[in-house]
Length: 271
Ligand code: ADP
Ligand code: MG
Image 1 (tube, rainbow, N blue to C red):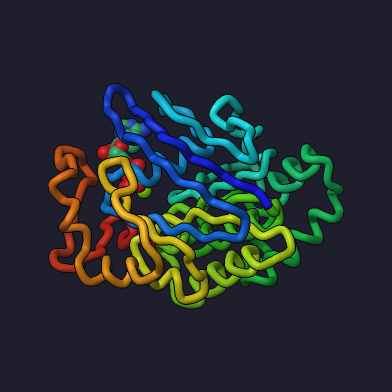
Image 2: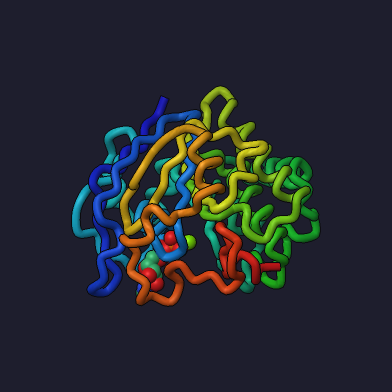
């Protein structure tokens, strides 16, 4: 049993405070959903936990089984068992999924042939086209293919904790089922995966069963509950927290599609 403990986490970008005291504990096998308006700092939270450069941590801690992650480089955090499925997966010209996964697995002391077999099995399992395994990572992939690609990585790397940042964006119904079913299976295995799933849509929970749902706004968790909170949010949106949101930013509460409570302009532009 492992534990990822986020305690009173504060972070800034430039001179702007984005995370204002986030506290959340995730145990093996648990699925925590984080839902909140655009620009509230959800992706920043995922980036700060996983060690993406460009953020300044101004307080708090993130520990995995007692080890302080904030003092580690991003690759060391990955080695400690942390995985991030990015909202916008990075294109890496010249490096294939196979090369990237083999290198990281060998670095972790695993066998290259076993990894190749695992990549093939995981790809088959979620319907990721095998010819994409050896093509440059994410280059010219559709939104759905990129998210399946992230899920293959998750399956092969077999982390203790996964942060999924809008893994449902740009997915059609079939891809959504395949991806969320794979993650749900990982939460039920012998060494079960713990999940922090950032999403706007409760359709993510058709296959992936959330144990806890959190409303995130203005850089902190405002409210926590069970699955019923996601139903409530789909009815009411985030109006209750709207007064906390800084509307000066480019993404805050932007809704070019009018009345759709959960419309996320960025999602809707993805293919
Ligand atoms: P969310 O994922 O909830 O939509 P983000 O974490 O992406 O929110 O962004 C939170 C706020 O931080 C936004 O106002 C965004 O513009 C700002 N922000 C995030 N990353 C950067 C950055 N690298 N440079 C400048 N501003 C940033
Ligand atoms: Mg985001």
